[in-house]
Length: 271
Ligand code: ATR
Image (cartoon, rainbow, N blue to C red; front, side, top):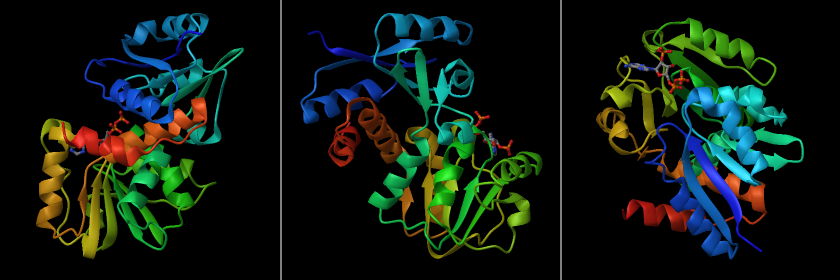
């Protein structure tokens, strides 16, 4: 029997670490898979999803810029993907693709790996775009003392808070209106690091012993990491662990076994 086929689709996608991560998972779990990266332009998304389904692909990961657009192209989506308004993992079904979102689960697993406890913590998410929407549901489910989402202007945080009302309370703020607050965990879900920056934030936001986490990794992580260190953060973590953990969650949805994310993460960090 030939290997079950999987792919990550995105644009650009050649830099994706997913093929390497899933190849390592497959070796560890003793399953035979083929996992490739396929460049897909936005206008080709619907066609490509149909073609990959017809070609017998078993599962797909979806990355930028397709995570939101792919929702409407699925035969059905999980509740958490519906809430996030985005899918990152597609599972084959007879009548098309079933969409899911393992990003938030990946974050929660990584926080737990790092010993960062959300339950009872005052949590701040910087940014109210797609990346933030993907993690807010799982964060609320982890029972923080409070969950605040901030943006440069109030509209996106307010809209997000309204949307998540059935799930839990999100406090919407502008970054500058956070003045005087203290948080135990600050998560950067903005894309500011890709432009070499950090959102403009008031001083003193991080409580004593507080930790900082960025959904980005690599060069995009550096500006927030520098800010976090300057605040005296007890832990300053990038999102590489989340990337591996969301992949592990996808792998389990497709194939059943739960691979060891820690081992693959160590390999990726080694370069
Ligand atoms: P999207 O979901 O739209 O793809 P994202 O990657 O989730 O975007 O992150 C975009 C977020 O980064 C936005 O919420 C934006 O914040 P605002 O709501 O304040 O506009 C934030 N962002 C992008 N560039 C930024 C910058 N230079 N400084 C601060 N925040 C920035």
